[in-house]
Length: 105
Image 1 (spheres, rainbow, N blue to C red):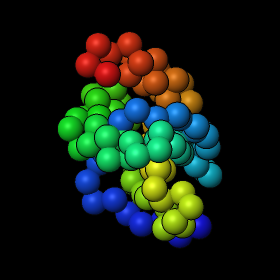
Image 2: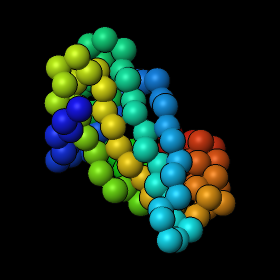
Image 3: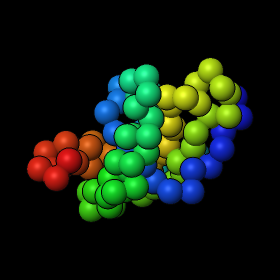
Image 4: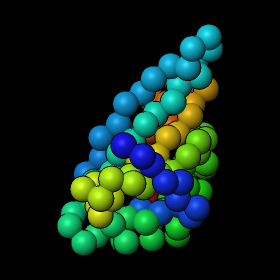
């Protein structure tokens, strides 16, 4: 699947699937997330990232690595993929917990 880099950061109502992978030779952890929005709601998902979701990630110690829309037409109408980085697995767990408890989210 070919991915296109999204130049702005976006989000909305979606179903979330993610994987956490340790970077080779370090304790750094990358988290790959795939959001599949309800039909016709991708623009809402993209707008959410564009209006501050990325700032929430940063506030809670998450580093944005990249944001992508699949080039495959079957998936591109409702899917966004992005990657976050964390110092280690414990930092990843803490960041996700704090992010989930943030009233702004």
